[in-house]
Length: 435
Image (tube, rainbow, N blue to C red; front, side, top):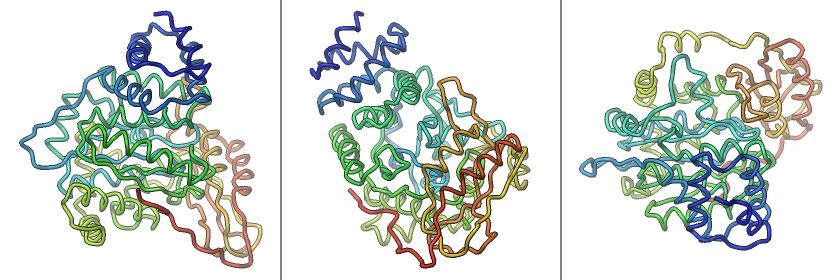
């Protein structure tokens, strides 16, 4: 195809037809449009946007670029999923998926890799020895039917267009675009054949949407299109000024997710897990209201069944459970660990998620280019959180790095992520709005 006129049309602010967008997606997935031209098109979309009709056409074209999952309709278990727009330390999907399976849902979770400074569920999972996230459509359906859940990524047969665009957006500065985010998320979710979806839409300095208003706009974009396509959808607007939990970095976040499943994870992580589960219980009429749904979800988490389901998931996806359990017992698996300590006493008033996300990325835990190789064991843990009292010498966080020089440089940067005051700060809600 001659792609240049369409780039020029979007550059000049003209709307494209569904047929044109279908042709673009088909040609790009087939390797007929070079990256440099698609990068130009993405930048034009970033600045000019897409209207509702264009966003719908792009989403459906991306969904239909590969196979769509088909589940037995005779099975009464609702097919559900949760998706986050990405946040530093956001590992909610890891404990949530087995919890949902134990609550009587089917969870075919198709996830992505890290974008910018935000981690990706697939990168976290692949820090587990032996585990594969490359599950074809038939295997995704079979495993979900058999054990209640599967966690995989796009393959050559499933949403291939999104897989290619996702990687390109990450390295061309075109990630924080509402229509592109909407199309990327929903192309995956519509391909799963969902009955219900809960969205975790982040805002703050470390999110793609800096303000609450922008996050609300993104949430409504996703909700309205998802419902139009037959998927009952709700969204939580979540503040990501501070990392979720106390760890950021692929393997370190897996360890924290397992702690949550074992009943002693961070309070903010558990809050998000329970709230997402409760929302889906209400959305699918499995619970009459959120208060009862929260009690049901918390009782299930405390029962230990989701922790056992987690191991069942790992075994189903090829993980070496002995190696996994042995790695969990080790304090750290990165070559070097350096503690960053407080130089003054008082109350933590800021733990800047953006700075911490940039540190993890620069240590090798995120991507700088499409071909970057992730270092799974680097990152930060034992983070102090706002409202906590510290003394001179209190650990603010630990840096896990490949070399001593990297760890020491990152430690100096990590200290700038914190602010301290003689007075305790006001508490701010984690979930600020539900749509």
